[in-house]
Length: 530
Image (tube, rainbow, N blue to C red; front, side, top):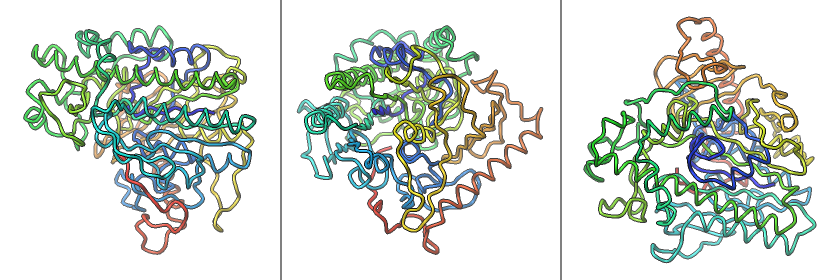
């Protein structure tokens, strides 16, 4: 089993989801497997990773905060410590003889090795893609690699993934493997190899309005969506973004802090913005190249036909514009080691075509991910779409069914709660065979619930909006005023499930605990990079 997770990749970035970015390896996986069209993450990095690896909603295991005016707290967020019973997938696989490997971003409490992984390359990427700082292998600190020494993070993540597969082939050839490859790409800062950037030098000069229209046309032709294109939102940005005046002071007057019409930009702004998106595309192309190298190693092991490959993103494309790490040198070439840029709201809107908003919002632009499933020996379908809605909470029960792995009834004297997700194995054979009662969302004050094709969603303190996703995936026709009774029922359902998740989150907390202490093996919570 091979799980590949991108970071901040938009729903339509990959070629097989309508994008113009060169992703031949992902496209081949899709052409010989399945593409899900309605699959959800949690809209943020740490919460998505905990859902993926534990099978639980992040709030229920203290890996994200309760927000949305609920007025409760068990600690959580990026520093929350899981309950003892919320174990990671490799723990369940180990009794079956699996060897588990991790390479890339972590952003889960504890370390990979004390959560069942046999090897791990853990790199925090705090200073960008061309330097290795704060990295370790198997909990042993690695030397710092400075800018100019030939290091590029996306390649390094693949190198270690391949290293572990080669060792597995040499030492454990008769036993199965699980590898979790968590690329940082294309998370800001947008930094890429010059040769990769050159491929897209002219691609984005048409602007984000034209790219959005082109992507939508391809997506409709592929059958991925049947909705209209959401309008640009010229106002909404992450509340932690630097103000546009500060961005222009630190970066230059060609930086743009809002998703405004492309034709409203100056010629200098158009050139600068097009160059930024070329770097984003180059990062994804490089990730695809490295995915191809990993798949080549699986083929060399003779394991390709019977390896289940899953590809996803942890949230939608990011509109974040902040400066960290080595800072921003306005004189540095865009995409180089001393350039610390984000693609911004305009290009994030294009990356999330045709959906509204971005990472951290619970609208479709924030919490929808491509899901590619490839397993030649186990899935007969080739190149088919799956409209069956799903969520990251479904991945673990799916893998448990396929492997026959069992979960304990109790851990540390506490009952192990049932998993909220469902196995998607029936969907691999036939679409729309696994219904869900609901999907629940809450992050940074943004909240949503989906019941059937109906979605109730709110942007921070704004009123609830109601959408029928069967006809309006781009969330343009707010039906809340026309159907207040449905809004009330769904709002109560959101609150009821929040209360249920909160009860799970606090069941093993000491009295008056903030939720940030737990005496179990998950005690160490290494810092992560958002």
